[in-house]
Length: 100
Image (cartoon, rainbow, N blue to C red; front, side, top):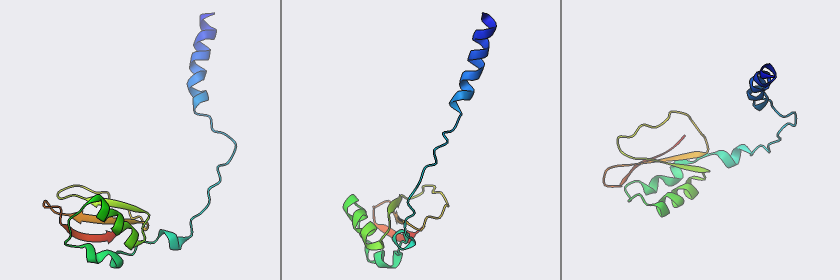
């Protein structure tokens, strides 16, 4: 009886790793909707960074996501064509608007 319990205990973690056979379908987003245009948001450089201004930058750049870049902080180097990056200084003044 102890051997059966041990066998069941050994098999249970493997059952959790099983995948379903039903494929997950995703709808591709047209490339035009994913493109950030930083040139359209350059007028915000020099303004004070606020959540409302972030929304305006996101809309102006046509990006899907916004990433704030505080001073002296590390950021990943992954490139995303649908993301606008807004860097600001210690006084919360926007210093740079880029895509990626």
